[in-house]
Image 1 (cartoon, rainbow, N blue to C red):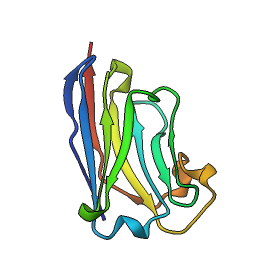
Image 2 (cartoon, one colour):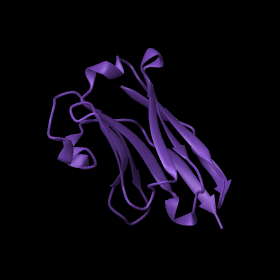
Image 3 (cartoon, rainbow, N blue to C red):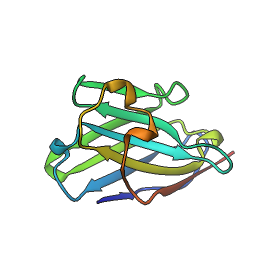
Image 4 (cartoon, helix red, strand yellow):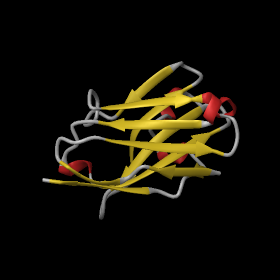
Length: 125
């Protein structure tokens, strides 16, 4: 199970840090990721880490502003969001996958079966 937290209301240009705590060890997962879904839009991959490739991925709209990180000792991974924009407003979900797949699936929601409950991020202009 995944427990996401850290959402809230922030002004444009502000920062938030989302947290996702897993019931098991993060080392058990081949992919860990953050997704978001704005009203009327499809769920979008925001950032992920692939254990197989050892790489971190970001969707282009957040690259340079958002940072994904992890604390294996706490079974928790994070999404640090800086320079937030109104278009970042969405429900943010964390997700993990245990079974290894090509890293090309890292930002693809179809690769994930374990999801957190979502946390609302609202950025006011």
